[in-house]
Amino acid sequence: MKHIAAVLLLALGGQEINEANIKKVLEAAGAKANEDCIKLILKNVKGKKCEDIIKEGAKKLGGVVAAGAPAGAGDKKEDNKGKKDNKKEDKKKKKEEPKKEESDDDADLGGLF
Image (tube, rainbow, N blue to C red; front, side, top):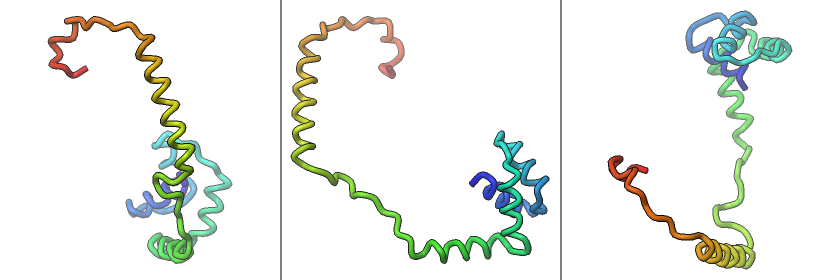
C-alpha cells in the first residue's frame, strides 16, 4: 500500500512516476522501499492515468461486500452470564479495596485529573 500511496502522491504533485521518485517519497516518509514491489507497480501503471486505474479498481471492487457481524450480535445468554460474573467480581474488589483519602495536592488543577 505504501508504494501505491507514493505513486498517487507523485501523480498528485505532477511528478514523473519512476523508481527513483517512488524511493524518494518513501524515504521522506521514513518507509523502506521494496524494489520488487516498485517494479511490479511500474509495470502495471505504465502508460495509464491514476484516475483510470482508480476507476478500474473501483469496478472490480463493486461486487465485493465488506460486512461483519452487526454490533451486539452474539449469544445473549453467554453475554448476560459474563455480565453477572463481572458484577460479582467488581463487588468483591470494592470490598477488598480500602478507601483512600483524597489529598489536596491536585486541588489547584481545577479538577482536570
